[in-house]
Length: 152
Image (cartoon, rainbow, N blue to C red; front, side, top):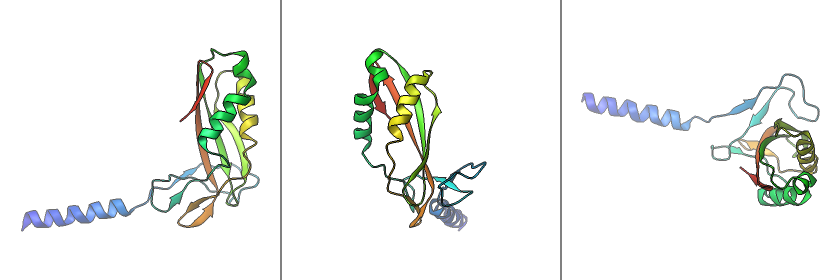
């Protein structure tokens, strides 16, 4: 009987933990112009129940191609190696309201060129939480080796 009781409570605990949804939010210190909520910007994970990430206007593969073709810095520095991270805030209407370089590459010229390209990605599919469109942040890690762009 003791084993059955322990098993019963283990199953109940597992069901309770698996039913919970992890919801991450970005710390908003001051209102972000253009967002639908002054205080809450979500970091959504497509693999979690009830969460759908914002959808960029072009695929990640197309983003890499655009970066590869349009970054003048890479044409001038074909052996450059570096990494940077972009952070884009998408409001509940699917509009990119802010995009910035989070982790810099170490080269301001490269960072500014990548930012200029990302700023052309204005209209997105809004991210959703439990079926409701919400403000969200999307992160893009860009790795450059031997002049080739990869996104992770």
